[in-house]
Image 1 (cartoon, rainbow, N blue to C red):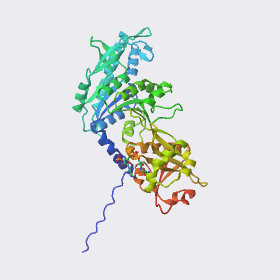
Image 2: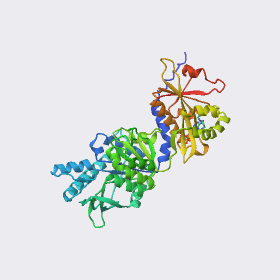
Image 3: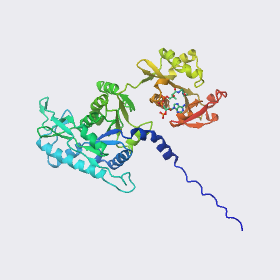
Image 4: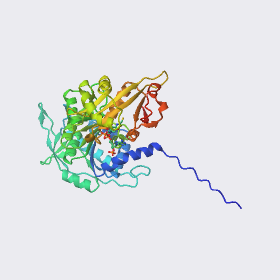
Length: 452
Ligand SMILES: CC(C)(COP(=O)(O)OP(=O)(O)OC[C@H]1O[C@@H](n2cnc3c(N)ncnc32)[C@H](O)[C@@H]1OP(=O)(O)O)[C@@H](O)C(=O)NCCC(=O)NCCS
């Protein structure tokens, strides 16, 4: 009798993208646990087909131990209510004038919207992130209001501004693991009810509870520069510069931006502008290195700019220790002066804290347009602050503008840093011929590449 030979079943196939995503998200999940996020969105979200997905993402953030305050608006719902009653909305300088009839519509629209959001947060359908958990939603008289009053001779009547936020009560609710839902209505000490702008309420709440993040969900990808390019990160000062120069922004971004700048300066951590129409926008913004929208920070982030001849000394000082220990290839002053146009630098109040260079590689016919990211360095005392990543992204964007299709890096010690940022290891023979011939066999650098 022969013993039966058991053939091991083949190992299940890995979904590499999923596994990589979850792994790279882990540090963020740790960092965000116990933090407070204020998520603000207009009533438009509820009228779109994105509300459900958004609520699922809110549930996921809650499950990760993030303390959540949701601030909602209801402008389209108020307009619909007014239209149903044959009333015409009145605005002055973009702000609704709330007369007594409008106020009735506001109360009704806000109430209905709030109930609908609560209902969505209470779902527990299987196969959704809401299954198995229960989100306790709370709210209350957290906002005290005052009238906006008469502006330019226009009496805003029951349109109000935030007078005070009862932060301790919100924090107490958050500590009980409740999701706090704030409706932009406030009572005054005289007992009158005021209609508030949700953007302002979000700013006031985020500032009062010292939120780690304030998130404005908009109908546009974020802030743009004069050429309409999306800005992925900027400081409150830079955002104020955009406002001062009247760089046009999408309507909803423009409405929230002044408050975002104030909140950022008043200690509300980071302010994000995200497009709610993008499925999973919050997840991509918070849990990937790249992000997806615009983030506003109060700290003076180092300023990224093209290097000039005045920077040669600073760059040499920055890279000299790395050349000495063999991390970077040695470049003399003369070569650096000749190649200075290839360099970008990070300037922090006049101090060069980082640099990186982009070298186009000449390619033969048929080879994809290629370039090398080289000489990436951050001053040791400024490391681990995202500066390296900022430089890398900048170089990648520069390469993309030059229609480069493949970006290479040759590195002896930093391969993993690049692999974690989307580069893949490859072999020397995949380099374009012009670069392959110059490859320094003795250095035995690893060759990494990324498709742009
Ligand atoms: C690589 C370098 C530019 C990163 O700059 P940085 O401003 O610290 O970058 P970031 O803040 O974006 O990233 C920091 C993360 O990279 C990690 N990191 C740093 N050096 C690394 C390396 N050699 N391999 C893998 N990961 C590394 C840090 O541990 C940190 O991760 P953690 O916070 O999860 O622990 C910087 O460490 C440096 O100047 N190194 C020496 C020069 C060099 O190696 N250049 C690349 C050759 S082309």
